[in-house]
Image (cartoon, rainbow, N blue to C red; front, side):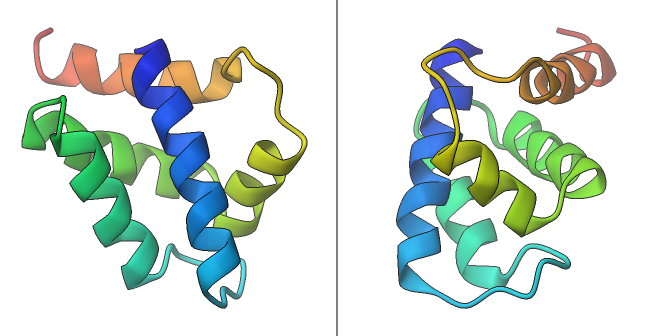
Length: 91
């Protein structure tokens, strides 16, 4: 879970440098990049759930702010979003 969250944060930083966002729903570039990165190491059902959880809890701007001001340890809220998916998927 820590590797996935770290990957999400790194991905968000890259996407932030590449595109515009309005602070609302995640844009298509963010969603596609997230899914590509996530499914490289996790099942697609988990990645889709995790992305949906993050989108329900955060704006794209909040994800970027967490990346820019982030620490080495993932935010507990990101972990909680992943754990919610694990519970939903029976893992």
